[in-house]
Length: 167
Image 1 (cartoon, rainbow, N blue to C red):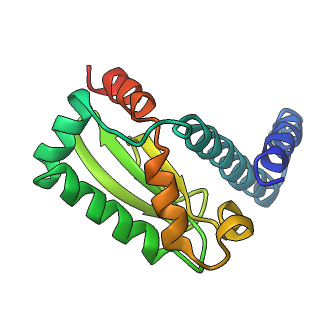
Image 2: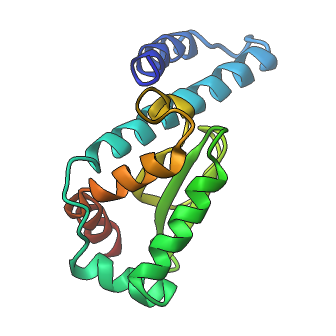
């Protein structure tokens, strides 16, 4: 529901946007564009999240080295990523390791909504911190969900994304 709904609704919004004319009231266009952004980002973030699951949680390669350089060590990166994620527990949002191609910089970004992200950033590692992602399996124990997530990260997928944007 939390992925399929936005995917289906994105198609509906795009169909409505195709009918916009110069006479369409601005508030209609603005509302449709806001929903388009929300649904498009929801789909993109969910797809990135699903794709970076199913690994062994062991980082290696150029991305691991870059994380060590950017944050002082890989352990420090993980500490900061966990802190950002747990700050969202009991609420909603995304924790994203992002790469900024223009600045060649890695950051950990917080998003409380599908439309909040840093412009120009490419998501490398995406964590869904909306309660629906963990409540059925972990209840309110967001830290246990985070442990399971990190133990199952497909770092090769994050590495692939990093190579795409940093190369």
